[in-house]
Image (cartoon, rainbow, N blue to C red):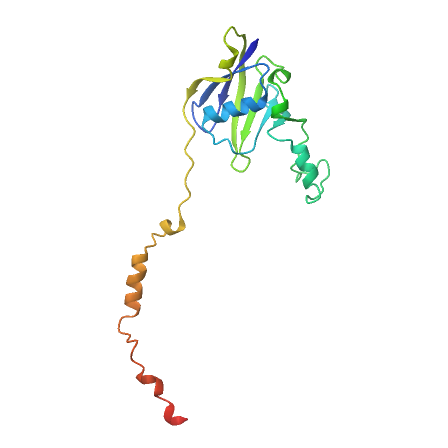
Length: 199
């Protein structure tokens, strides 16, 4: 049995590194779970792997769910584009599904390059490079695993609450009401009959 040793980089954090190891017959869904656990992601967002050439050009896409099925369902609502239309968001890369895709079927280079993209609404892009292929003499139940960590992901910035941002205080509202009513006597209705004599 062989396993792959990969090194994972994240450009947004200096010296960010994860070393991970997976069996050759593990699938990409297992790879996905290992990555979000050891990186510190929530794991509840869409993600995909892209198999790349040595210059990081994408050649194949491996998605968490079958995107082709989703396209069939949504085609009626989407505008139609020509094949080369720059506004089209459809990928023309061969598409595969993580749970059905084994690592050994996609690793074709001794230094295979892979891009892992997590959360398409707030994209986080990780660059993965195969370091070595090793014959294992260990218990296969120890895989997949993370063997080295350096640096952590930055904590998400909490959006300020509008009430907090404006330092709005309900006690201040009471003070404003008191000042507004200052000098005003709610029981003084003497001016209301001022025009009675004209009627």
